[in-house]
Image 1: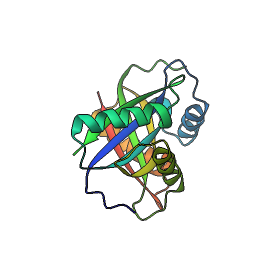
Image 2: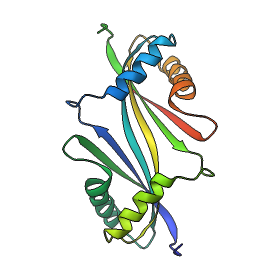
Image 3: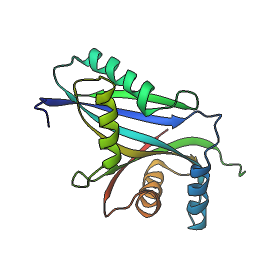
Image 4: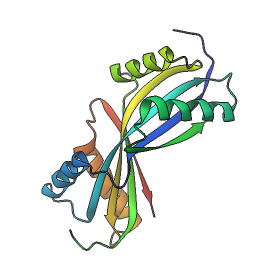
Length: 88
Length: 88
C-alpha cells in the first residue's frame, strides 16, 4: 500500500452506445415487469467505477489521467461510451 | 413495445459496501499500474443502470418505484449499497 494523500476521487460511467443491443438490460426489464412494476419502459445496464487518486494531481491533470484510463482500460470505445467526473 | 410517454429517467448506482472485498477492482487497479499510470490509489467497480420511466409518474412516485426496484432486483442489500437519482 502506497502512502498517497487521498482527497480526490474520480467516478467513471461506462454505458453501451445507444445503437448496441443490451440483452442483460432486457432481462432485467423483463424481471421488473414480472414482479409487477409498471411504468418502466426500458432498462440499460452499464458499469460504474470509483477511482481514488493521489491529491498531488491538479483537477485538470486528474481529468486527463482518468479519461485515458477510461478509454484504454475501463471501456471498449467501439461499443461503449464513457463519462468521467472528478470529485474533490 | 408500449406507448409510454418518455420524459423521465432514473439512474441507479450500485456499489459494494466499503467492507466488502472487490477482487475485480483490484485486478483493474493492477492493470492500471502495469500500464504505467501513477497516482491511482484504488479502483472499485460497481454497476450502473439507466431506467426509462413513463412520465405518468410524478417525481416522488418515480423515486419510490425505482428505490424498490433497486432494492429488490438490482442490488444485493447484504453486500451492496445503491443510490437512485431521478432525471427529468
